[in-house]
Image (tube, rainbow, N blue to C red):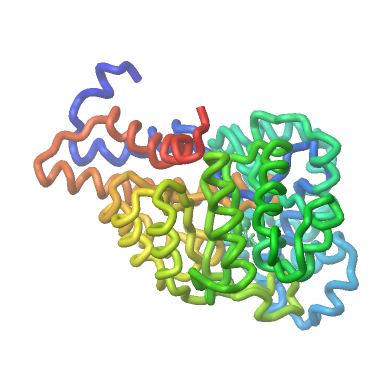
Length: 421
Ligand code: FIX
Ligand code: ZN
């Protein structure tokens, strides 16, 4: 559309279409996923059997079939996918967010979601070549690049990075710290075995050595940020290993390297261990811990997502107090249209366009097709209503300003935060 047309003030009726055009046209950055570049091999999940055995669907399976988890876990991947397909897509209508997502993915590739089995879908995905499949899916989902979650202490992933990973402009690395900060007792010896003089109680020179470890891994990965998920019980300051390593190693290393730290707060880990990855729950956190971190480290930048719906309004208030904290996403159990709408409206009302509305958290490549389709479908009317209220209150709105805002929300806020481009 010519620039001259985009500069014409829009009527209230024209706003909805202009928002749809721009939210569809701007390529988004997916700032938190569990996807992997092809160089990381089998860590990257894709195809119909992975889509159908997503842990969100596993949790839903056990509510609709009599197969107990221990029997399910004895099945192989295909058997599990067949059971989920039969239970959630054939015997029942796929009306949940996660089941409807699989329908949307199949439909996007012209495949039927009414099939009695996964034969046709398996044939289609088995015929795909991963590299081209990734590029095609980025285009289909309106995303320019994925940000990964990379764990240096993962026994499969760590050695791949130590051997050297080819850069892929479609993927950015993130240094994930859960094993260090949340499970030190299980993992400190693996760090010691790599030549870092760390101790079982994280005492002595441990913080300095972890800071060196992070520097060494930052050289390998070039992470755009570091990240950790934290329980609903997270407190700061705290005399625990996590509290000390955060304050004396991780946050100082982030400042040394000029990278943000992503704090994802509010998980109640393994409330039902029988469900494995699907076994985590949610709890309301005490965000005064976040407040104290933002106060103590004013020159560090923090990317923050909280898991409890009950924490969302106070996160917005904290974002108004601390310019070094960038709220992002409607994480995990929040990534449902009813809550995404509520969260995004209150964020716009309190923060303007100074936040990042969404990430996909995709674990399987093709999920980004439905996760970003749903985000656009939910947020277009929210943005349109915002601009319509602005026109009613006396301000002209043009398609140019809509494009600028959508670009800020889904690209430049993050790019500036992490120093991309
Ligand atoms: O900690 C995280 O990165 C969480 O997003 C995951 O652990 C979680 O299982 C997930 O994939 C949620 O969408
Ligand atoms: Zn995640």
